Length: 379
Image 1 (tube, rainbow, N blue to C red):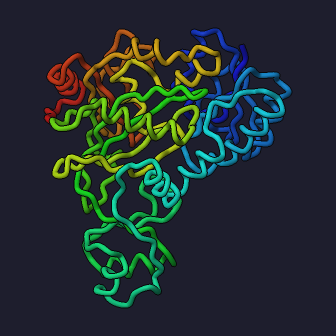
Image 2 (cartoon, rainbow, N blue to C red):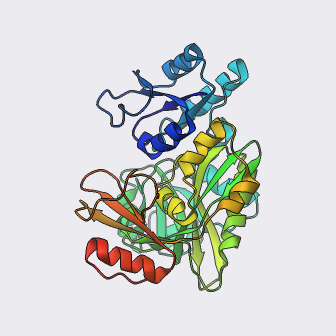
Image 3 (cartoon, helix red, strand yellow):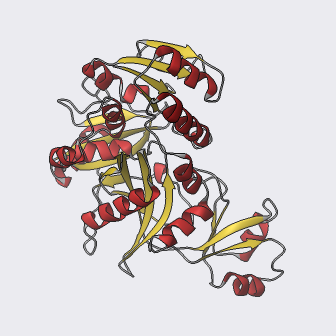
């Protein structure tokens, strides 16, 4: 079995599993100084874009292609390549198709998609900066009052987003952008959940808590995060049903994650966003369930993806993820990116590292966190 991986930065997440399966691995990478190039069987340095990876996949007669790309811009190129190489050469690409990427990459299309499948979305409107001249006219055109969230149709990681209670911030935003999608700010708990899918079969993993929404716009990566969620009025299986409903209607493949907001006051879940790429919460998903989301992509590539069996295998650990900058605690046991005879993983680039910890109970997880970092944590 021979598998081509596009991108090397995330390859260390799967290297141990690939070797364990006896898979011959090939990486294509556009940056000759990228990490992990010593881990596959073979690698190629290629120009940006999907033309050369597709050419190499055909020449090498690979059995499947697994894109390992953690950013949005290349996703449409991957989707176009996927449709061509699957049709012309019968080489499966373990990622989403053009339609799914088109919906997920445009926040306005995403909102319309959610509405079309009867999910709750925050009230919203698209306005041009010339549509209003005063705060009163802005609110009238908008149809709801402050606080609001201003967004562009594309972007990830909080880029070009403004959360505000002030009309002056709105005016400043429209100095940089002609139009904006403007949503009513929803006060509640941010939740992320990953879904792995292939051939119409979908495995929702675990709902992960990423903190409370806030007017400061603090990105979830800077907060404590934990899994699974533990809301009194909202069962985690309900989150999993919503996630599966989204993936099924999107007809996604490979890995996706979705962002939701749970309003405790309304006891209602709002659908916010979809990402058709590896999730920033994948270590928490892995820690909670003992199923590594990126390893599951490799399993799909080698024909080992069985949703019923995976549901049986899914564990239920209590997990906590802490931003630590530079980790200086005891070294995790090898292999570093696998929870084998260990209870934590350190990940992320220097200066922005995080430690993801798991235990059988919340108290056990907190004790491990205290041992590793010297700090007390409570949720």
